[in-house]
Length: 91
Image (cartoon, rainbow, N blue to C red; front, side, top):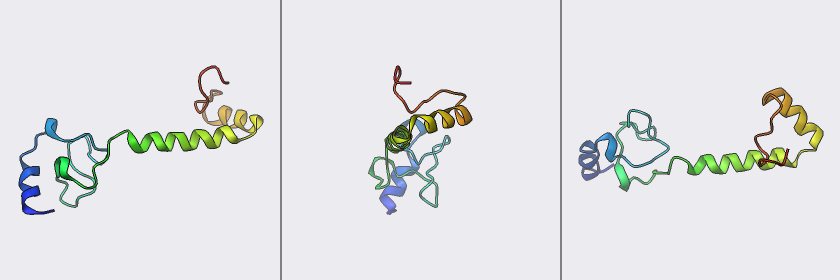
């Protein structure tokens, strides 16, 4: 991180920080060793929900591809009988 980016990051308040999945609840960056957010100019910045949406889609697709009996077993064992990977009305 260059000097200009460091100065900009030091002047950011919690409300000025970007919506980034790598920021913790105190506004510290989990990528940079210094923990200081570089703001909107950061190359690592990702929206908070972007990666999660991709993950949810992949696991839901994998569970939907299983035979119905196996889906039922997983639902009973881990989800108290519900199937969160299916759309409403699909169970």
